[in-house]
Image 1 (tube, rainbow, N blue to C red):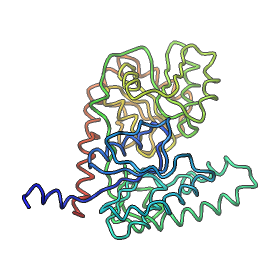
Image 2 (cartoon, helix red, strand yellow; image 1 turned 90 degrees about the vertical axis):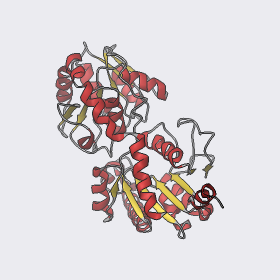
Image 3 (cartoon, rainbow, N blue to C red; image 1 turned 45 degrees about the vertical axis):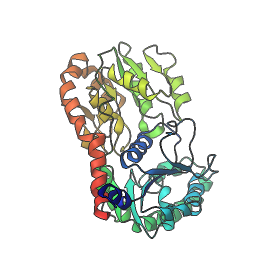
Image 4 (cartoon, one colour; image 1 turned 135 degrees about the horizontal axis):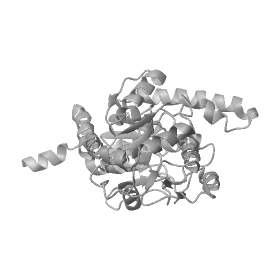
Length: 369
């Protein structure tokens, strides 16, 4: 056997497992980059038309042809626990998300690596918020379910040979809620795709339209800024509510979900972007903004503390931010202030390239191979 054939024979067979593909999110994009970078197969619970198109050059196993029934977290647990016996074919399994890790029971003879975007927030740090979404009489049942899922989640993590966190923020959450110490590998950002194109006349928000992203505060701020334009390029559970808030304000435009190319263009031609979620895990959108030379009006908590530099690549508002704080920040971040931060933004984003991400993952894989 020649050297090339020996290398081919020794190369481990790798599969990446991700909960599901239902939106055009940063986590979904990360997984596709990871599979491409490692030449790995992909397994996912289900795939909807609202997510990225399925790549034709990947070997993909989709466990269900429809969205699992409620309660979704139990259905997903069952899906990955009982429908993944094929994992025995693989040398290394990399798990992403909060349900795929239940498949670790099917892969005890190989290596298991968990890439954690966050421990389940509905189980741990944001349990009270999620409980409040149910009628009061369901709260005891919710608590029992969370105790069961929390125990199962922590048991699965104990089976991992290595646990990776997408930020120091998540490293801290993992340690606090599971006792697991993890290694940080920052997510990959398409710093080559996001480029400074021009300086238009609008500010941009491209966070998902969900309650914890606080897009309502951004829209409320721009109702007080009639001379400033806001474009919101995303969709989500609060889209109808937010459209109603903005309907009488011609300076606010909500586009709904956009393609990757459209988002790159919106970011590349903006003045600056706004991103103020509650304790964001990492936050890929701010780094994409910086890659395009656009500063970010953010919030001083979560992953943004690791990616933004106040006064240099954007503004970090207080965790207890008010609408007035956002108004003042937008007034400060005029075209001149934003342009002055362009070079620092572009330089800072280079820390999060796809190449550095794949190098970080390969360093971990080399421990096992």
